[in-house]
View 1 (cartoon, one colour):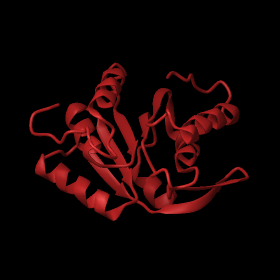
View 2 (tube, helix red, strand yellow):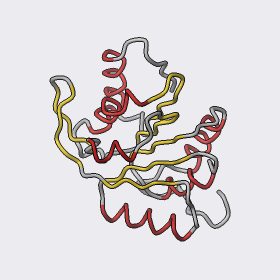
View 3 (cartoon, helix red, strand yellow):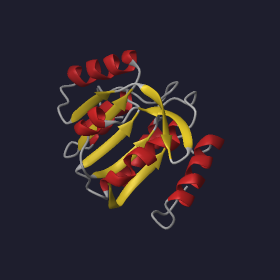
View 4 (cartoon, helix red, strand yellow):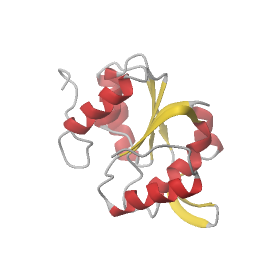
Length: 176
């Protein structure tokens, strides 16, 4: 862990080992943009570690957004943009999902080209929210970009990946 920055080994957090694995993989891409769905301590750590990368973090929970904003300010991190947007029910194709409202207002704050997308939200109680995230942002992920799904050991996340493979055949490789 970087000295003075918040740790990640606690409830509802990415974890130090996952963080290190992600940073190692992401650093090889030398990304300009990194979009994280779900904010918190990891936002601070990614922005501090990937200092040449613009980090965008999307959050629906006001208390999590306030905590993240406070941590970013406390650590003087300026390469992170926190986007607050609610969870809403939305259609992608013919299926209905509860996901981040990534409509016009939120999308205007996001980069046109995403190098890395980390899907670590919305919370599991939102039906299909993580699956909906890729549908909402797929057209912004650059060719050769990286999509990372946290909690891939869970059934819902595995199902989301299978659905993405069917909807976007040949668009990406899946590595566990």
